[in-house]
Image 1 (cartoon, rainbow, N blue to C red):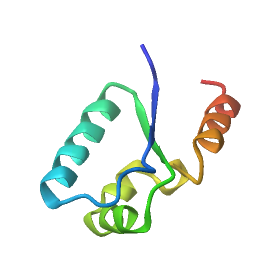
Image 2 (tube, rainbow, N blue to C red; image 1 turned 45 degrees about the horizontal axis):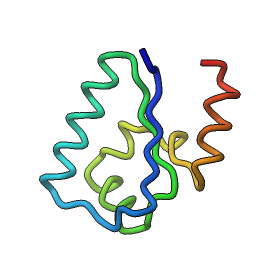
Image 3 (cartoon, rainbow, N blue to C red; image 1 turned 180 degrees about the vertical axis):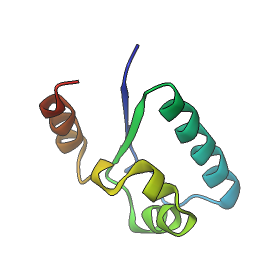
Image 4 (tube, helix red, strand yellow; image 1 turned 30 degrees about the vertical axis):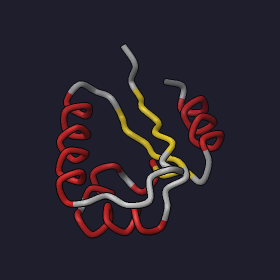
Length: 80
């Protein structure tokens, strides 16, 4: 079973409150199963919404990456 999900968010411009609620629920479910969620290439508007809603805190600031490559490298270095 995978223990990490890295989402390339480069194409996500924004998220509405319903989408935010669904994403928060998904993150909670995955965390309960021992799966960490990370995002790469988040746009400012999308990231701002995640921060305002508290979802970014659930994800953890250390789990946002400027590129997919950086996210994959961080995962590989973690030894998981």
